[in-house]
Length: 401
Ligand code: PMP
Image 1 (tube, rainbow, N blue to C red):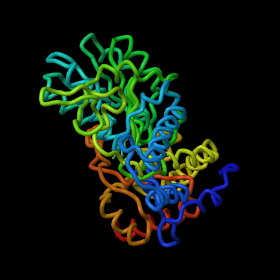
Image 2: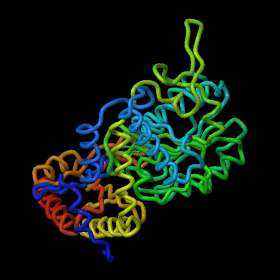
Image 3: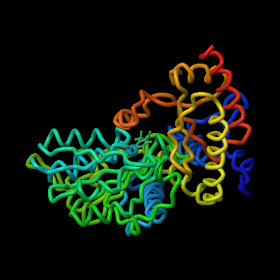
């Protein structure tokens, strides 16, 4: 398992308890004390809103809030902080791109190419905008190794392809396509690339300028931060051309009954009082994560998933849907319904997710109705894997006798 100090890492997480083996970090990660304390401190000791009031407390918060934006930009190597828009999370970010970028630009005959591996968050917003504009959503089919089929890509792109939507890492299989290579092909055809980084932001080092993608979204809660906060990155020139999608306070520079003039980017996309506590929590999560041995943590987590897969593969009827080197392990057993197994595992203190993982087209492509998914994090241990295996064996004996 390498030199990574999992015991030290684990001590940051007060929610870890001996009764439960938490294997659902791909749904949402546990929160370290640093994040809990930063959020607690905000509610306990601060007052005021951001970008509104003039008194000292409020201006201090505004500075902190904008520093957090700069920290995210630096972490992702975005050229400027104003390329970062606060949202409720990945889902809202992708809807923002669909409604604010795509809706005004698409027309009948245009195409949006979407990978078959996508979470619904990176499919439904495109189906919605296609319905609104007359554009068509085209499927980029699953290929080998749970990745979208790269060899099919050039043949699917054409002069009508306006957008390509893809995730950096699948929440089902953990497969991580070569985003830079995809972006280069898409750009040759004049399409913009929208990347769902909900899982990828946690497991990959992301350099937006090097990847050269046009839009990128993630959610803080999968990255050890609070729920209800995330961000959208957009290339400066693209954001500058986009209309606001929600109207309200502080997204405009002047308003009358005749109309309004939107503010500059990013405020024009941030109508209403924002999630200040969320931004502070996200900032704390990022600062904390950057102090950890991130590469060691990911290698260690992958080794846990390897161990679990190796041991489960000894059991009859096991089938894995795990991409190579993934920290996620989606699996099923012949003749055993995933929900039945999950219910029994839950009684034995194993917290994992079973179902379609908001990826129904991928389930259809794999020819399955769902999977169990054990998603590992650096706070899990080899003993957690042992407990999973023991519990699965017991569940199998109950369900197959
Ligand atoms: N995309 C992927 C790959 C995900 O795993 C998730 C979360 N399950 C989302 C998008 C949506 O994220 P959120 O619910 O935080 O908006």
